[in-house]
Amino acid sequence: MTPEDLIQRARAQPIVTVDRVVSVPGAELAAQLAEHRGMRLTEYLAHPDLHRENGSLRFGHLLGPGLLPRSIEDWQAAHPRHLLPQDLIRMLTLFDGVHLWADLADGRSYKGLHPLAEWRDAVDSFSALFRSPPDGTLAISYGANGDYVLFLDTRVPEYRWHDLEDFDHSRFIGCSVEQLLDFLWQEATADDPRKAPDVPTPPRRPVDLKEAIQAGDRDAVEQFLSRGALAAGYVHQAVYRGDAAILQSILEAGGSPDERGGIGGSETPLFVAARAGRADLAAVLIDRGADVSHRCSAEGTALEMAVPYPEVVAVLAKAGAEPTTTRLREMLQRLRQTD
Image (cartoon, rainbow, N blue to C red; front, side, top):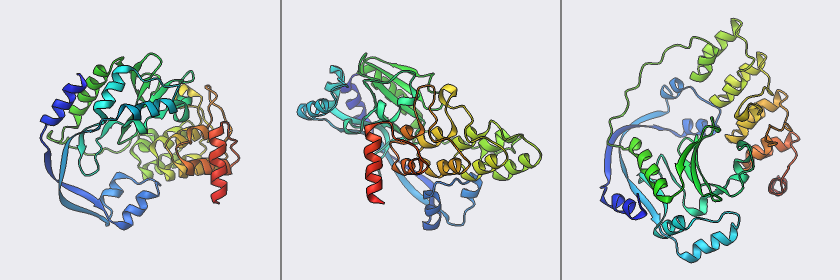
């Protein structure tokens, strides 16, 4: 699909209005969710401050306005290690940012292509995930759940789609803008708001500790632990689940805050918490003795994973994590100045 093809398809698609009953958290529930301390789905749905309202949602295809050649030249001058391919530069002059089936209330789709100004150097945020330093690589996409990232290796060039929880098994998208746009269009078909919503299946009771953690069922976790289930090996899973109370239970039952796992099998749970921006989970792990200086097989540290999240950087630094890059040292200096 050429950029011109995408423009024509986006213009031809009328706005779709969908009437739905939506769940809207009140002020009290919204404040609890903002604390990122984890809440079971059943608890959330039964919360007295969750209100159901009839609402109309409007969806459509949005393409950001194209950039002037001078703007791209200025960006390129500021990022000399990332030489953009010519077909991508041409696309950026036509549109900057791709948001297919975007919620028109906020202009973002479930997953899309960032505008150029929001592209990130993979070395800054994702270096520890790669087997070798990702020089010349950019993270160029966004997603509602943050589980997947589209990378552009400008040295080849090539586009790859990575699952952050299974990073070594990436999906090759292609080497051209046309292949990139084909991929984005195909992915957007799953987000078509005109499709009938999936009918949820009734939840079943967890049969073991692993399922209880995955389900976020705190009561079941406590029951399995009280019956002698071993907590060893489940700390990573508790961090992935994102429930601080479950993580605390697993650690108190003997789970190691420094168990190895994650990407490459050499990360500690602190890496996962830092990469997810979860200062609360990092604090729980540190309180139980997590090693803030551990280096994974790629020589990365949890502090490096936390670069996009100043609140996590502050928690790690307070616990004694030492900065390894100029950017981290500058960030810590700014944080100390604001204390």
